[in-house]
Image 1 (cartoon, rainbow, N blue to C red):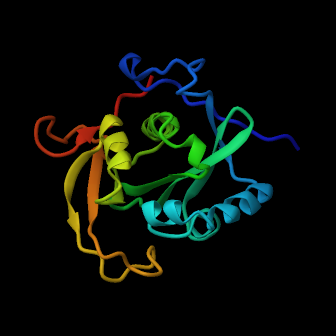
Image 2: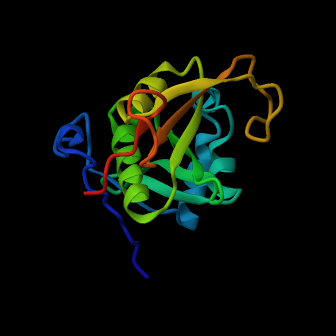
Image 3: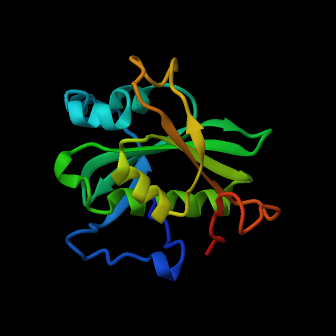
Length: 196
């Protein structure tokens, strides 16, 4: 059976990327396959990635509940994105993402993957808000998340967490984005863009 790809539409015209640009390659999201897990396990050896993400990429890709998708640039696997900790009663989920190969970081791949996933979430689910946690020192990721519409909502002191096998000696920033109609536009996190 062939691979199924999902190419999310642009979230807003202002967020559209030139897919032919060298800095923003053609990015697709698709279900993770068994072959992907071996490649992702190799990323565990990248100490910079493990430090930036705060854990092992293979553990994120292979364990837990939720939705995990492969991020591809062309035909190359370059990352993993997903929603974990879905709390349908509370209408929330945690977004997690990582870009594996060092030569693919800083090319707006994460931005394009996140905006595509958020567009899908807005169109296809009843989630009210999406949140994420990021190590405070990972400023490249913080800037990306803010460009995607996430807003800082607080700081989490990390002392013990299943996400971190060895908890870092720094805090997580908590960022959120709302989709609910009752969220105030000028206070609190930004809203998810309307479905196209």
